[in-house]
Amino acid sequence: MVATATVLAVLGGIPLGVLLLVVSPGGLAPHPLAHRLLGLLVDLGRSLPFIILLVAVAPVTRLLVGTTIGSWAAVVPLTIGAVPFLARLVETSLREVAPGKVAAALSMGARRRDVVRTVLLPEALPSVVASCTVTVVALVSYSAMAGAVGGGGLGDFAIRYGYQQFRTDITLVTVALLLVVVQVLQQGGEALARRLAHR
Image (cartoon, rainbow, N blue to C red):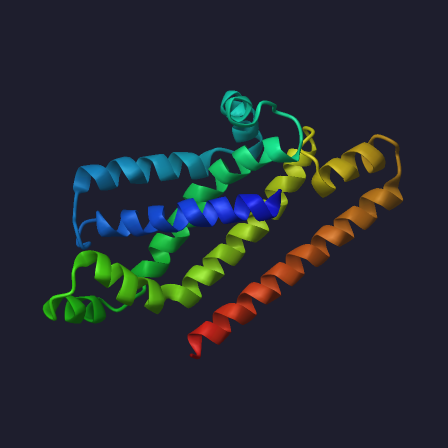
């Protein structure tokens, strides 16, 4: 569930983050109206509490996977919640690239898409990886919430067998497992980002 949502979030969030930067004022192809509309959509997606998003997109979830219960159904709201979150982080990462490098590429005749592909994304790669790590950790948290409404996963397990059956030990073990998963993901992502930064 989390892995699938992560892949979909990366596939949607990184291009959206790039687009946000490209059409922003001072970007490679400034378009104030498009930037304003995209920014509004992204901010709207980020501002909704996940539990509300989970319910609000239920018709879309049913349309796409035929049900609103289970792990596959949870992938839809997880992805919808993660894409704008990651897009804003990616946009911020790309803004950290020195403007002089972009200007140098443009002065040498590089096309805008080449600047994105050969300058912006490679230069911001460690920061983009760190952004993806933050998103994955957020998805783990969201997935536990999805479990509370039948989304499956550790959250569902903790609610069904821990909380509803008054098994405090199961709840505590589940919390410990979630902490371990988050730490492994965070440490792994940070290590990869450091490695890419020192290439």
